[in-house]
Length: 463
Image (cartoon, rainbow, N blue to C red; front, side, top):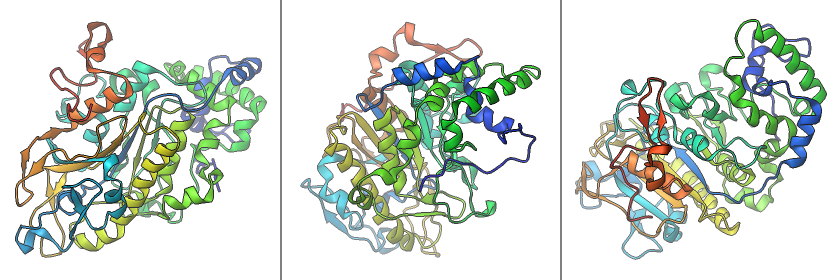
């Protein structure tokens, strides 16, 4: 069941029950004097269907244990290696954790990266969402744009029914784990359109089986005349307060949302063949402490959003800050990730989309080599891991290596920026294109920037 209806806000609303805050989130983004005929014309001219390149960015909040996933240390002492055993994969010479048998069987479509370096050590999604290596506190005027913001600004929407930059990142009780990034100095018009809300344990609701779309019902989305009247009323009220300044950036996104069912259709994964849904596994809608739910269905929804026209989709999955019971937690979460990630890759391949859609799955840092007294692993920014697939990369290989204890990179250290440069290259924003002077964009102080810093290149092993 899909319910596009958010929690009511305790603010004064209009007579139709839609309040001003909800309009600022979705409806009012199109209030540029749109007429009903104009909306209908936009619907008639809108086309959907996948014929573009895209990115799915999967964030594992908390820091997944690199030495228990793709980089097992069987020769390390007992207090470091842990109980998990390596298994052979479809690619000779590559071994990964025994709890990822499906990825192992499909290793010719994956690339584990064992040597991610440059983590700032903070419990946030910032580096995975922006690729930036400098502290967020040193961001340019207006803030760093996220990956999706750069893509939205430089490539624009595929069609007018789906915003190019979408987020399935749940808002989490530890807020930085649910942050998909924003438009930064590129402007709010390129920020992610958030498709799910947040109802963590401290916010009461435990069983969240329904998607939330910012307080707007499906019926209201379909009732264009009511929408138009409400928008007119809202504009008159908002103009007097200056709230409408800058809102025109959302016009094209709002046209699509108000004139097409494409977004609602993409979110409703129950329209899929039950066998397809089953392949993604059965996760949980409950929030994992202060992290995200283990919602494997969001992997499927991400594919549906890309197919409908999204260019960049981000999502967060579970909670990986395992200071205690690391291995019990791994036995729970590894199989869920194994199944969902493999299903996503297989699904894209079956639909002829895998070469166009890049997938990256990673966290903010790694875990300590030494197992603590609580059978957990603590924070370890010196090295972490990622796994990539799709986008036409040369799959079926491993990039990088760490020493015998998993303490630091010994071969091919890889930065967040290099991974992001590879994603940009895969999606068509090649290094020579984004570095051209005419493609530089300026922060609020007038300083020019490109998506990645000068000298940062895509991973030549992959492109």
